[in-house]
Length: 133
Ligand SMILES: [Zn+2]
Image 1 (cartoon, rainbow, N blue to C red):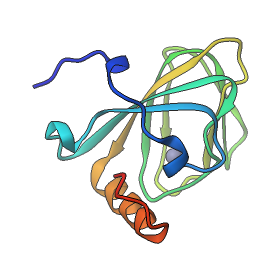
Image 2: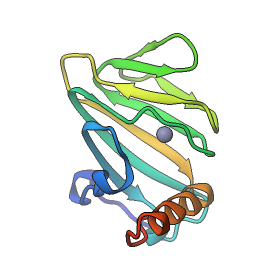
Image 3: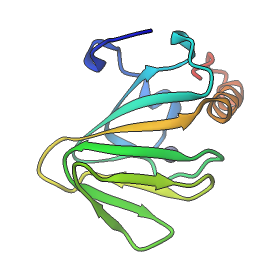
């Protein structure tokens, strides 16, 4: 078991794994390091005016918005989100999360671990980076 405040966990090197982001901090708060076998839990922070990459990948996201307001861009009409909202992004659905509000956006993002690990290990190999899955 583990109980730990998420801000005690060092952020990931976002620039090594995500292009075209702005003002993004990602903490991988639960992962295989903790013995998790099915899911990875990330906590994202997006500064005012920042955004995640507009991307797609073969795994889903399950998101719970903790704070801030912003816009979810994708293949549908842009959708507003606010604290307490849940967001589901299916596998291979294009998506981008934008902080166009006045405060820090924070959300929890669950990712199925196996697909994520395979993808990032492949990317790291392509770019001669150490494994960052
Ligand atoms: Zn994504």
